Length: 569
Image (cartoon, rainbow, N blue to C red; front, side, top):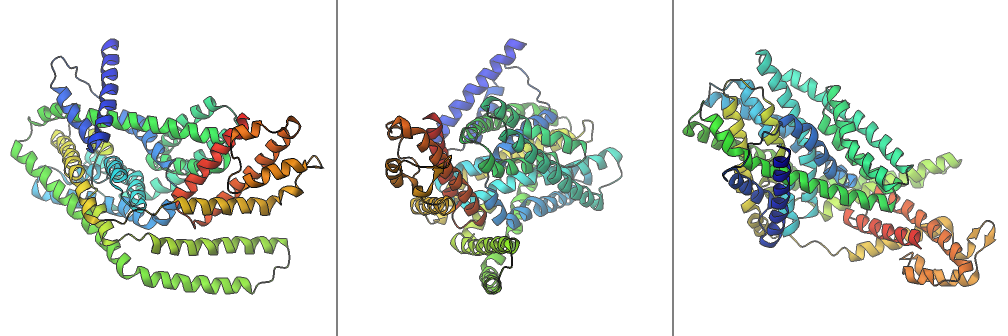
């Protein structure tokens, strides 16, 4: 059996790699290929029957998948799109679950309202894997990508809370309580934010003190589970705790982790995410024939077809209806809201200009207030620079793929519940149909929208690099004023380094090694000094948000590369 398992695992990895390569060359979304290959593999002779425990997927696969996405998602983008993300991932998930539950129960009375709501809960959350893969390839605007990724991170928590309440109602036969769902959801959010925040902060602090990439990577593997299981034990949302820990780790990592740790983390978690996501979609296709056989004993082909088509139609209608409100508000209310915000910020600036600080403490408070003022203006400029247009909302409406959570969560409904096999098969088929329907047509929809090509980031990157370089010089002073252990720098070293500080701190490792041995150590110390000051300046600029997340990421990558060069010299 062990040899058989290893054989299946090896074959699965080979299929994942082949599907990924084929998807890049043909443009077909890899999840679609993997589901199709999984279905085909299940019909091969002598293939073993594989039962994947759904709790293993929810507790062992979902946390690292969510963490891998959250740690790479810029907090700046999440903050700026928080309203739309929260609306889609919380309000619309709950509304969709209850609406689908009511309609399915009305059309198919043999399916109880609690069970129908459980079905609605598991099909409500979207999976952004296929959508973002297509979006990256065909040039979906970055803001839409952020909304998709942020929504898919949070909506799992909402869906699982509703599912938990529905399953409890099924087991207790006491009916579905909306009030209980609201209270449970409130604690799920608060508890998850607290636990995830503590875990993210504590592990980031620990990793900052370790100068060992192996230990650092090992701790990063443990973070999603350290957040998930305590939150679940406290009856909070484990998945939301993982998302919180990931977002906090990503934000703190820019300030506290070394360049080597950040680069290692990015590569490691990209690999883990690829393997887990591919495995889930492959297993999804592999299990489908077995689920069809199980459902045949309690339903007919016509009934399951009607149920699946009804749920898919409701999902599409509810998603577009849910986006209609934000779209109308964006079109008609945003210009007036931006003008009101500008007016308030102008009044705030006049108030600051009129203030005369009496001491150092008041100076710091005014400096903090001016940073908040700059952030407010940057947010308004962002809204005008990258608005979500009607075409953008249309694309968001057409990105309703379902995936890993739908497949795993539906199998946690207690066995023996009347019509549970029908509901499990329906959820699988809904996920499969949405993957095929939206996955195959989304590239065409995006192409028809004629989105404006993304602006060239090179000018923004150079401007940001100059700004952080100038800030570093303002903080530390010119090179001529630098001292090491009270001694001034060698004049020849000063003239050698002057042209390399801004915009680049290091022109090349080779030039560094060619400096005289007696000035080599001085150069390293000064470079590290300015590099640290540039990182601090980059953090301040990122907190304001005047540039795009891509520009901040590119400058951070450049500083990481410089840090690696300095350390290896």
